[in-house]
Image 1 (cartoon, rainbow, N blue to C red):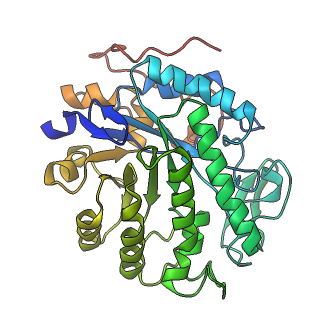
Image 2 (image 1 turned 180 degrees about the vertical axis):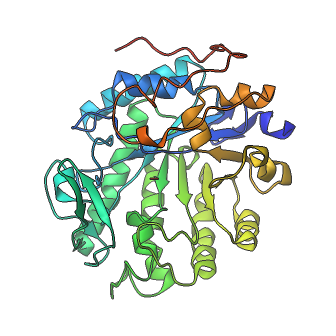
Length: 367
C-alpha cells in the first residue's frame, strides 16, 4: 500500500497522497440548494484525503432531482460553496465540485420550479422518488429540444464558472449512474432520431459537448469527468458497452482533461483498455471493495488514485487509520440522506489519531 501515500500532480494540483474521497449525495443543503456551515465542517474534516470530490451539485433548476441537494448556479450558491472550499483549503485539502444534472431521475415536487423532468426522450424510468410527502412514482420526462440541449450545455458551462468563483480547484462532470449524460449514452433512455440519438457517435455527442464547453470555460486542467461503464443504475441499458466507451474515450482524450474518474464494475479488460487509451490521470472506484484492496489498482498501475465512498463517509481520518492499521467506523445507512449532524459530522476519530493536524473543523459560519 506504500504507493498510495506518494504525492501526485493532477491538472493544476499537487496532491499529498493518492486517496480520493468519492462524491456522495448527503441531502443536507438548504431547500434553496445553498451549502451550510455543517457542509463546510463535513468536508474540512476529510481534508487529509489527497482529493475530495463533492456530492452531486445541480447546474440548474432542471438539474435537481432530490431534496436538499446543493446547486452551483446562483450567487447564493457561490457564497455557500465558498465557505466550504475555504474551510477545506485552510485544512490543507483540495476539492472538486461534481456537476450533476439528474435528467429524468427527478420529481416536480423536489425542484424549485415544479416542472416536469427533462431527458433525451420521453421515456419514464422504473422506480420511485422520495419527496417531502413520501415516495412517488417517477413521472414521464419531457424530451429536450435541440435548442434546450444547447441551453443545458451552457448551464454546465455557467455552473463550472460559478464553481471556480466559489474557490473550487475544479469540477467533475457526472456522466454516470443513470443521470442526464448517461441517459444520452444509453439505448433505452435515448430514442432520439436527430443528431443526439441512434448511433454511438450521436449518443456520445451531448457528453462531449458538455466536456468541451466546461474545459473551454475553466481550463481542461480543472475539468474532470465521471463514467460508469456497464452500470444499470436508474434503469439504464447502454447497449454495446465496450464500443460505446471506446468511442467516448477516443473523443474525450484530445481534450486533455485533468482526470477521468471511473466506477469499475466487472469488465476488467475494458478497464485495461480505457487505462491504455486515457492520456492523463485516472481515478478508480470499485464499489464495495474490502479495506485490504483499497490500493490494489494503484499498486498495479491501473489507477493513479483510489476513490472510496463509504469508508470516507464514516472515517474522516481514514488516511491515518489506514497508515496505522487501526479499526474503521461502520457507516450508518440510516443517516446517509438528510438529517443533522448525526451520521454526518459526528463519526468519532481514531483514539490513535485523536484529531490530527489539518482535520480541525471550521468555526460555525448513490448517488
